[in-house]
Structure formats: structure tokens, C-alpha cells
Length: 249
Image (cartoon, rainbow, N blue to C red; front, side):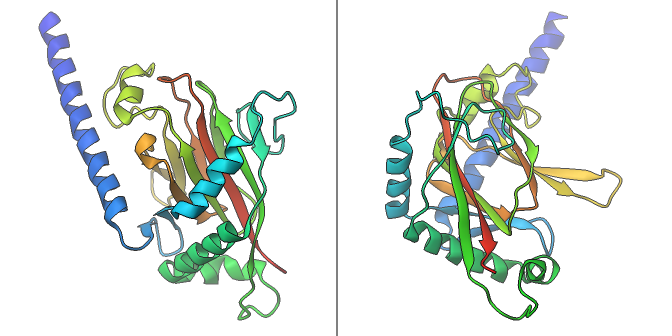
């Protein structure tokens, strides 16, 4: 019995090292990309991951630092999250311009998206290019054990910017309640739920964002369901900024 347990743990350690290597290679591809990197689910759906420009990221951090996280009047109650400390932020011109550029990039990567979804939100003249508007933006101060359940957003596009992630992938895997040290341990992860017209019914894509993802953004169609799992290895806040974009009509 002891021999079986030892063999199991050796296999788990090998699985963990393989997973850590795969995730490091993914991050290297993101960091080396000259343009925003696309991840494709289908001709219509997918997301973009990009490193937020330094000036914009500095402004976001400054705005986040002005939030009084000790205030009793903190909760942004319209959100789906099981997170106590969520509040609105002010939008600013440079961020809106950057997001509009990323939206154009998405439309170039996924031209079918415009045909299937975007025109439903435009005026009667579907060939008219309407400006995008950042309607709301908020910050999540997520504590250990808190989570965001599966949900989607209103609007055309949504985004998440990771400001602070207080753990490494290995720390989180090793200290979570799940005893597995492989890809089935999703503690602290961000996840997309993707419709699939196969026997599986639905598929998923896990983003194992740890502190190396600070300053990076994911940008995706607002209708895509996504969720954030709880983390366990740190007493600090996991801080993210999110928002929605609509056509101005």
C-alpha cells in the first residue's frame, strides 16, 4: 500500500512539473507576441489577450489605490460575484481608446462575429460603423475563498485586467484543498465556458493566471460565460478591473 501511494505521488509530481512547463510556454508566447494574441474557439467566438500599455496600467493602478477598501459602503451590488468588495471606477479617455483599438482587432480576427452578433446591436443600417462606448468599469478585491460563479455580461464586448494576483501557480496548486497536482486542479483559475454541439454539451478553457499575468488583459464577447475559482494560498487581495462596451446608438 505504501508503495502504491509513493508511485501515485511520484506521478502527481511529474504531472505538476509538466503542467508548470506548459503554462510557462504559454506565457512566453503571450509575452513575445508583437500584436494582441488571439485564442480561437470558433469562427465567431474567442478572446484576445494583451499586455496593457504602461501608461494606462499606471493610471489603473493609481485609481485602484484610491479605493477605500475599508469602507462599509463598498459592494457594487449589480455584479454576480460572491465577492464582498467590488466597486465602480471612473473611465478615462486613454483606456477607452485602447479598448476601441482592441475591439477593432477582435473584429479583424473574427469577422464572422460581426455578422452573427454585432449587427444585432447596431442601428437599422447594419453597414454603419458605430463607435463603442465604455459604459461601466469596476474593480474586484477578491479575498481568499471568494469566487465569481459562471455568468456573462451585457453589451458587445467585456474585458478583465489583472492588477494584482498574490500567488504563483505552483503555490496555489499545492495549497488548495484538491489533492491533485495536475490540470484538474483549477484553484484560483479564470475559466471560459464554451457552447459545444457535441456529446460533451459544453467545453471549457482554463486560464491559469498567477502573478506573472499582472498587467495583462483578456478581451472577449460579452455573451461568453466565464467564472473565477476561489484561491487558497494567500491572505492578500486578488485585484482585477473589468468592464463592458456597447455600441453608441
